[in-house]
Amino acid sequence: MPEGPSIVFLREKVMPFISRKVVAVDGDAHKFDKELLINCPLLNVMTYGKEFLLCFPDMTVRIHFQLFGSYTINERKKGKLRLGLYFNGDQELNFYSCDVSLLTAPLNTIYDWSVEVMHEDWNPANALKKLQAKPKVMIADALLDQSIFAGVGNTIKDELLYDAKVHPESLIENIPKAMLKELTDDCVAKSFQYLDWEKADRPKGFLMVHRQKECPVDHKFLTVKEVGKAKRKSYFCDICQKLYGSIKK
Ligand SMILES: [Zn+2]
Image (cartoon, rainbow, N blue to C red; front, side, top):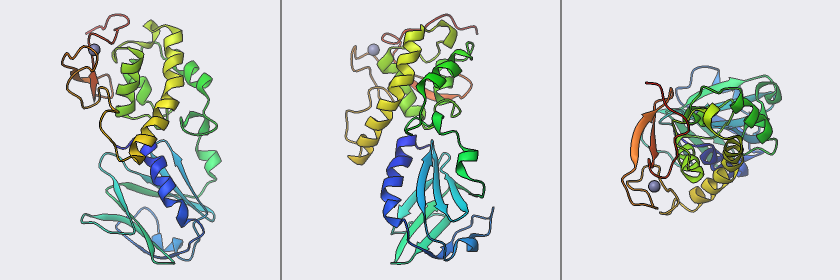
């Protein structure tokens, strides 16, 4: 699954399509009549967490990449095309293995931008309050909760917890408030660092623990474990990352 910054990077690549008109559509997306888009100009491109939003007059195409979604710009690849959008000027966007739907309500009535960690309206104080309202939840699950941290995915979650030296199975009620505040603040910086890393074509050395073998500090093998309710594979160091409180089995 992509992280929020990967979708922000896609947005930057699609911005030059703004004001171009759709001249043809393709793909097996079937939740709405794709022909509605023909002759419509692309007005804006937005992101909300892991959702990619193509805004046309009075409607928005929402693309969620789920686990295996991908895209190509001005080229095609093998695989089942979910939605192909062809614009004047011989420009095209192709989306594969993703969920595509059409939104007709104004986006501000659908989305709460204050939970989108890379949006200018992001509100860290609200995120901290929401965390404290879930004392029995594991921090690893809370960081993946898109209603608190829209855009934070499994990779950023692992890296944030390693930087903060917090064990992913710590319960929120046992983590000091200052530490929770640090995590809510750091998720923004980490997301923008991740964006820069993507733009640089993912050079080695950025990821400290996610999909790595050993801790960069003590060189002991990292623990790889499906953690919490989300059961996402987590990478962490048992030595560096403190477990706050005990876990009931
Ligand atoms: Zn370590």
